[in-house]
Amino acid sequence: MTQSSPARVFADRAEACRILAAELAELVASINASGRPAVLGLATGRTPLPFYAELIRLHRAGQLSFANVVTFNLDEYLGLSADHPESYHAFMRRELFGHVDIPAENIHIPDGTVTDIPAHCAAYEKTIRDAGGIDFQLLGIGRTGHIGFNEPGSPRDSRTRRVELDPITRQDAAPAFGGLENVPTHAISMGCGTILEARKIALLAWGEAKAAIVNEALSGPVTDQVSASFLQQHPDATFYVDADAGARL
Ligand code: GLP
Picture: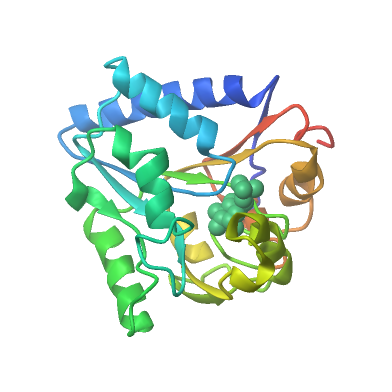
Protein backbone atom coordinates (compact mmCIF):
# COMPACT_ATOMS: atom_id res chain seq x y z
CA MET A 1 0.00 0.00 0.00
CA THR A 2 1.43 3.32 -1.00
CA GLN A 3 0.24 6.56 0.45
CA SER A 4 1.55 9.78 -0.95
CA SER A 5 3.02 12.20 1.57
CA PRO A 6 1.08 15.42 1.22
CA ALA A 7 3.10 18.53 0.49
CA ARG A 8 2.09 21.88 1.91
CA VAL A 9 3.59 24.73 -0.07
CA PHE A 10 3.87 28.07 1.77
CA ALA A 11 4.71 31.54 0.46
CA ASP A 12 7.91 31.54 2.52
CA ARG A 13 9.70 29.65 5.27
CA ALA A 14 8.56 32.07 7.98
CA GLU A 15 4.93 31.24 7.28
CA ALA A 16 5.64 27.50 7.13
CA CYS A 17 7.45 27.66 10.47
CA ARG A 18 4.71 29.74 12.09
CA ILE A 19 2.05 27.22 11.11
CA LEU A 20 4.02 24.10 12.00
CA ALA A 21 5.16 25.57 15.33
CA ALA A 22 1.55 26.38 16.25
CA GLU A 23 0.53 22.82 15.31
CA LEU A 24 3.36 21.37 17.37
CA ALA A 25 2.51 23.53 20.40
CA GLU A 26 -1.04 22.21 20.22
CA LEU A 27 0.18 18.61 19.92
CA VAL A 28 2.51 18.96 22.91
CA ALA A 29 -0.27 20.54 25.00
CA SER A 30 -2.77 17.83 24.11
CA ILE A 31 -0.32 14.98 24.82
CA ASN A 32 0.68 16.62 28.11
CA ALA A 33 -3.02 17.03 28.98
CA SER A 34 -3.44 13.28 28.50
CA GLY A 35 -0.96 12.86 31.36
CA ARG A 36 2.30 11.94 29.66
CA PRO A 37 5.38 13.63 28.20
CA ALA A 38 5.42 14.51 24.50
CA VAL A 39 8.28 12.75 22.70
CA LEU A 40 9.88 14.78 19.91
CA GLY A 41 12.47 13.72 17.34
CA LEU A 42 14.62 16.70 16.37
CA ALA A 43 16.82 17.60 13.42
CA THR A 44 19.81 19.84 12.75
CA GLY A 45 21.14 21.70 9.71
CA ARG A 46 20.27 25.17 8.46
CA THR A 47 16.69 24.23 7.59
CA PRO A 48 15.20 23.97 11.10
CA LEU A 49 16.76 27.26 12.31
CA PRO A 50 13.71 29.48 11.64
CA PHE A 51 11.48 26.75 13.09
CA TYR A 52 13.47 26.63 16.33
CA ALA A 53 13.40 30.44 16.48
CA GLU A 54 9.61 30.26 16.26
CA LEU A 55 9.44 27.60 19.01
CA ILE A 56 11.54 29.87 21.25
CA ARG A 57 9.22 32.79 20.46
CA LEU A 58 6.16 30.71 21.42
CA HIS A 59 7.92 29.61 24.60
CA ARG A 60 8.71 33.21 25.56
CA ALA A 61 5.12 34.19 24.83
CA GLY A 62 3.95 31.53 27.30
CA GLN A 63 2.37 29.41 24.56
CA LEU A 64 4.72 26.40 24.63
CA SER A 65 6.46 24.66 27.50
CA PHE A 66 9.12 21.97 27.17
CA ALA A 67 8.87 21.05 30.86
CA ASN A 68 7.13 17.80 29.94
CA VAL A 69 8.87 17.12 26.62
CA VAL A 70 11.42 14.40 25.88
CA THR A 71 13.64 14.78 22.81
CA PHE A 72 15.73 12.49 20.61
CA ASN A 73 18.02 13.96 17.99
CA LEU A 74 18.49 12.17 14.70
CA ASP A 75 22.25 12.08 14.54
CA GLU A 76 25.72 13.24 15.57
CA TYR A 77 29.09 13.35 13.84
CA LEU A 78 31.49 10.62 14.93
CA GLY A 79 34.56 11.96 16.65
CA LEU A 80 33.05 15.29 17.74
CA SER A 81 32.60 15.90 21.44
CA ALA A 82 29.67 17.91 22.78
CA ASP A 83 31.79 21.06 23.13
CA HIS A 84 32.90 21.11 19.45
CA PRO A 85 31.02 24.07 17.90
CA GLU A 86 29.94 22.00 14.87
CA SER A 87 28.70 19.08 16.99
CA TYR A 88 24.95 18.63 17.00
CA HIS A 89 25.07 18.78 20.80
CA ALA A 90 26.43 22.33 20.56
CA PHE A 91 23.97 23.19 17.76
CA MET A 92 20.95 22.11 19.79
CA ARG A 93 22.11 24.00 22.89
CA ARG A 94 22.72 27.14 20.84
CA GLU A 95 19.60 27.04 18.67
CA LEU A 96 16.94 25.62 20.99
CA PHE A 97 17.69 23.94 24.32
CA GLY A 98 19.56 26.91 25.80
CA HIS A 99 16.45 29.07 25.36
CA VAL A 100 13.59 26.88 26.61
CA ASP A 101 12.55 25.09 29.81
CA ILE A 102 13.48 21.53 28.83
CA PRO A 103 14.95 19.47 31.71
CA ALA A 104 18.51 18.43 30.78
CA GLU A 105 17.76 14.78 31.54
CA ASN A 106 14.99 14.76 28.91
CA ILE A 107 17.44 15.52 26.08
CA HIS A 108 18.92 12.66 24.06
CA ILE A 109 21.51 13.06 21.28
CA PRO A 110 23.81 10.26 20.06
CA ASP A 111 27.30 10.59 21.55
CA GLY A 112 29.95 10.96 18.85
CA THR A 113 32.77 10.01 21.21
CA VAL A 114 31.68 6.55 22.39
CA THR A 115 34.02 3.61 21.90
CA ASP A 116 31.39 0.86 21.83
CA ILE A 117 29.23 2.25 19.03
CA PRO A 118 26.90 -0.77 18.56
CA ALA A 119 26.11 -0.82 22.30
CA HIS A 120 25.47 2.92 22.31
CA CYS A 121 23.16 2.63 19.28
CA ALA A 122 21.21 -0.27 20.80
CA ALA A 123 20.82 1.70 24.04
CA TYR A 124 19.58 4.74 22.04
CA GLU A 125 16.91 2.61 20.37
CA LYS A 126 15.88 1.17 23.74
CA THR A 127 15.59 4.64 25.29
CA ILE A 128 13.25 5.66 22.44
CA ARG A 129 11.14 2.54 22.97
CA ASP A 130 11.07 3.02 26.75
CA ALA A 131 9.83 6.58 26.22
CA GLY A 132 6.87 5.13 24.31
CA GLY A 133 8.15 5.94 20.81
CA ILE A 134 8.34 9.28 19.01
CA ASP A 135 5.14 11.33 18.74
CA PHE A 136 6.48 13.90 16.30
CA GLN A 137 9.61 13.69 14.16
CA LEU A 138 11.10 16.79 12.51
CA LEU A 139 13.24 16.23 9.39
CA GLY A 140 15.30 18.17 6.89
CA ILE A 141 16.48 16.67 3.62
CA GLY A 142 20.03 16.45 2.32
CA ARG A 143 20.92 16.92 -1.34
CA THR A 144 21.36 13.13 -1.57
CA GLY A 145 17.77 12.70 -0.37
CA HIS A 146 18.89 11.62 3.05
CA ILE A 147 16.88 11.96 6.24
CA GLY A 148 19.05 12.00 9.35
CA PHE A 149 22.29 10.74 7.84
CA ASN A 150 20.65 7.85 5.97
CA GLU A 151 22.65 8.14 2.77
CA PRO A 152 21.73 6.31 -0.47
CA GLY A 153 21.66 2.57 0.16
CA SER A 154 20.29 2.86 3.72
CA PRO A 155 17.74 0.07 4.08
CA ARG A 156 14.13 0.88 4.93
CA ASP A 157 14.40 -1.14 8.14
CA SER A 158 17.78 0.30 9.25
CA ARG A 159 18.17 1.26 12.90
CA THR A 160 20.46 3.62 14.80
CA ARG A 161 24.01 2.82 13.66
CA ARG A 162 27.36 4.08 12.43
CA VAL A 163 27.08 5.48 8.89
CA GLU A 164 29.55 6.75 6.33
CA LEU A 165 28.82 10.23 4.97
CA ASP A 166 28.29 10.67 1.23
CA PRO A 167 30.87 12.93 -0.51
CA ILE A 168 28.06 15.38 -1.43
CA THR A 169 26.98 15.62 2.22
CA ARG A 170 30.57 16.26 3.33
CA GLN A 171 30.96 18.92 0.62
CA ASP A 172 27.80 20.67 1.83
CA ALA A 173 29.19 20.67 5.38
CA ALA A 174 32.67 21.88 4.36
CA PRO A 175 32.07 25.67 4.72
CA ALA A 176 30.85 25.26 8.32
CA PHE A 177 33.91 23.17 9.16
CA GLY A 178 36.35 25.53 7.41
CA GLY A 179 37.28 22.98 4.73
CA LEU A 180 36.43 19.49 3.54
CA GLU A 181 39.40 17.98 5.37
CA ASN A 182 37.82 18.95 8.70
CA VAL A 183 34.43 17.33 8.00
CA PRO A 184 33.98 14.02 9.81
CA THR A 185 33.72 10.99 7.55
CA HIS A 186 31.20 9.10 9.71
CA ALA A 187 28.26 9.73 11.96
CA ILE A 188 25.82 7.95 14.23
CA SER A 189 22.30 8.22 12.81
CA MET A 190 18.87 6.93 13.64
CA GLY A 191 17.90 4.52 10.88
CA CYS A 192 15.09 4.82 8.34
CA GLY A 193 13.18 2.20 10.34
CA THR A 194 13.61 4.23 13.54
CA ILE A 195 12.36 7.40 11.82
CA LEU A 196 9.41 5.70 10.11
CA GLU A 197 8.09 4.47 13.49
CA ALA A 198 7.38 8.07 14.55
CA ARG A 199 3.63 8.62 14.72
CA LYS A 200 3.74 11.98 12.91
CA ILE A 201 6.50 13.34 10.67
CA ALA A 202 7.17 16.81 9.23
CA LEU A 203 9.92 17.30 6.66
CA LEU A 204 11.01 20.90 6.03
CA ALA A 205 12.70 22.18 2.87
CA TRP A 206 13.47 25.70 1.69
CA GLY A 207 15.00 27.20 -1.43
CA GLU A 208 15.42 26.18 -5.05
CA ALA A 209 18.46 24.01 -4.29
CA LYS A 210 16.05 21.54 -2.63
CA ALA A 211 13.36 21.61 -5.36
CA ALA A 212 14.67 18.64 -7.37
CA ILE A 213 15.22 16.33 -4.42
CA VAL A 214 11.88 17.29 -2.83
CA ASN A 215 10.14 16.39 -6.07
CA GLU A 216 12.01 13.10 -6.30
CA ALA A 217 11.25 12.20 -2.69
CA LEU A 218 7.54 12.94 -3.08
CA SER A 219 6.85 11.77 -6.62
CA GLY A 220 9.68 9.45 -7.60
CA PRO A 221 9.94 5.73 -6.88
CA VAL A 222 10.18 4.56 -3.29
CA THR A 223 13.81 3.53 -3.14
CA ASP A 224 16.68 3.23 -0.71
CA GLN A 225 18.60 5.52 -3.09
CA VAL A 226 16.48 8.42 -1.74
CA SER A 227 15.72 7.64 1.88
CA ALA A 228 13.13 10.47 2.10
CA SER A 229 11.04 8.56 -0.50
CA PHE A 230 10.18 6.04 2.25
CA LEU A 231 7.98 8.78 3.72
CA GLN A 232 5.52 8.15 0.88
CA GLN A 233 4.56 4.97 2.73
CA HIS A 234 4.12 6.64 6.13
CA PRO A 235 0.49 7.27 7.17
CA ASP A 236 1.16 10.75 8.59
CA ALA A 237 4.18 12.39 6.95
CA THR A 238 3.90 15.92 5.54
CA PHE A 239 6.40 18.03 3.60
CA TYR A 240 6.37 21.72 4.64
CA VAL A 241 8.09 23.59 1.81
CA ASP A 242 8.45 27.17 0.65
CA ALA A 243 7.49 28.23 -2.87
CA ASP A 244 11.06 27.73 -4.18
CA ALA A 245 11.50 24.20 -2.80
CA GLY A 246 7.99 23.34 -4.00
CA ALA A 247 8.49 24.78 -7.49
CA ARG A 248 8.67 21.40 -9.25
CA LEU A 249 5.73 19.71 -7.50
C1 GLP B 1 22.67 17.21 7.54
C2 GLP B 1 21.73 16.70 8.64
C3 GLP B 1 20.35 16.46 8.09
C4 GLP B 1 19.88 17.69 7.33
C5 GLP B 1 20.82 17.95 6.17
C6 GLP B 1 20.41 19.15 5.33
O1 GLP B 1 23.08 16.19 6.73
N1 GLP B 1 22.20 15.48 9.25
O2 GLP B 1 19.46 16.15 9.17
O3 GLP B 1 18.57 17.51 6.89
O4 GLP B 1 22.09 18.19 6.70
O5 GLP B 1 21.03 20.29 5.80
P1 GLP B 1 20.49 21.74 5.60
O6 GLP B 1 19.24 21.84 6.40
O7 GLP B 1 21.56 22.61 6.17
O8 GLP B 1 20.26 21.91 4.15
